[in-house]
Length: 113
Ligand code: AMP
Ligand code: ZN
Picture 1 (cartoon, rainbow, N blue to C red):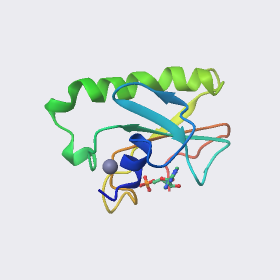
Picture 2 (picture 1 turned 180 degrees about the vertical axis):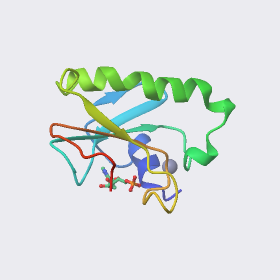
Picture 3 (picture 1 turned 90 degrees about the vertical axis):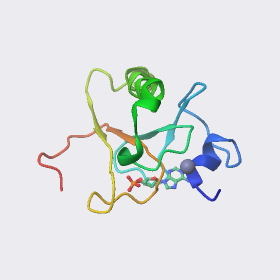
Picture 4 (picture 1 turned 60 degrees about the vertical axis):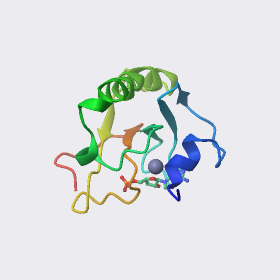
């Protein structure tokens, strides 16, 4: 398996997790687009939103539920943050392992580019 996020999830590539439980991991993005830029991933390899199904109900819930505590840990819970899931080609998904970007620490534009 050559998936880079699987390698991070299974410890083959070392990172300092911002959050970790049995099913979910969060770590700082390599090329941050904001002062705080965390990626939240399921440890299981799920390619994209299109591959998410009812089977992943618990994992999907844990993924979302991890976010408020990550925000608190990064001290951005009050100021706010943006969550982004790039899914597929038009959205510009580069790493084909589902991930939620958590961006914070600056103002964001709407609509997004
Ligand atoms: P996306 O375009 O939504 O697929 O985003 C992929 C993100 O993964 C980008 O923001 C990259 O900077 C980030 N990324 C790629 N490789 C790594 C890595 N080894 N560690 C942390 N972040 C990474
Ligand atoms: Zn993977």
